[in-house]
Image (cartoon, rainbow, N blue to C red):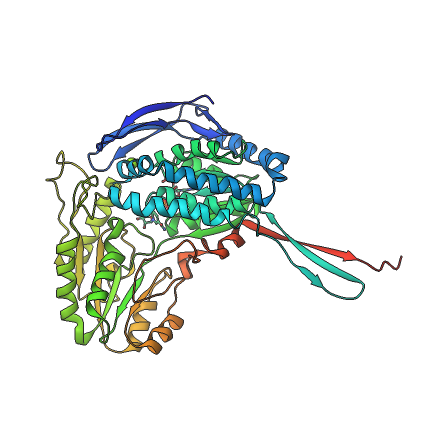
Length: 502
Ligand code: NAP
Ligand code: MG
């Protein structure tokens, strides 16, 4: 295999061969006109390397390769069992390369290495392994109709799938999309986010090593406006799966309409976390902290709105502030004690800062943080203190808009009815959490809350075995769990006449 690559070394001393090409048909190629994108280390603001980006011409080539592979007996006629074995091998290879892959996530995204290693990489390998087990279990039904006939259904791949992913969990997001797509026999053109283009290219080499035939998986970097839109509007792509912002999802939906593509969209949120008077306060505080401050707050289902019942409001504020002070250590992501690394880009960092100003202008009470930090490493990097606003009311922008950073708003409520009303007062509906020791109340709330996920007495402890997705403007369709297979298979009905009268 012709390799376009550079040798890179991370601050933790690890060295690896970083592919820089477009991965099309199991080969590394340059872009048709030399188009490249540069990726920055958010800890140092230094350039890591440049990689090729895909032009419309390149997307045509990638889609053609995926189409050929879809109809090639080497993939089309492969049994589910063998597809599963390949996926299982891939999961194993990801585990074997876990340290390098986690290193790349940390250098490119800024997330703490311990989180990348024990969180992202475990999730990536286990998601692929989970779907490997489904590859030979995607089948249809026999449907008895009349004595003259019966019908059966088969589950076929949807076809060539375009997958557009974000930068907050680069490899895990790739796994969420590749796992079910490949288990169901589809072929894929995957576009990583321009901010974190590196790890998916290393994964590409593992895909070859796992034995996937040429064209089954193609990975092409590039900007959303160029590469992403060429993929979303391509006439020979059957499906688009997207994770990112609601605004981009709306644009993708429009582009996907050109040939009535099948779509799944997973977008943002402003997920509520409700704490009742009877909650275990210590548990609520610890989960509430993790629910918004992990991954630098860059989590689509982060519980970014905390609603606390009046009687314990002041006590919660004090304890939550204490937790942030004690646990949210901001620092070099390669330091083991670091909880929060830099924001992924200058743009995200500026966005978080701008919401501090918005909150102050709205007269919400800033009770913690919000200041830039420049005494880490070389004095550069997109580091910011975590931010807590209290006494936030539903009219405020900081109550409504997704910030996507270590930024939380805390509001007070009196009755259960108020809590539900405030929780549902959002255009989004992705995650939600409720803290109470009252069993019936917990399930009552779970039923009434408008969200794709409800956590009872926890937050953001997602699991690849459990379906994930949103209602309202948080998305369309589900990923993960068995439900994730529905997005990647299409049902064909076959009617069988067993008593022909002709
Ligand atoms: P974004 O624009 O929605 O990016 C997500 C993916 O879509 C990236 O791969 C992006 O490519 C691609 N894309 C962008 N414009 C496109 C277009 N016109 N056609 C096709 N693909 C396109 O998100 P962002 O700009 O990185 O972040 C902005 C906000 O999105 C955040 O502040 C946050 O609110 C939200 N977000 C949500 C999630 C989530 O998990 N739900 C993840 C990340 C961000 P490029 O990156 O190459 O432009
Ligand atoms: Mg980067």
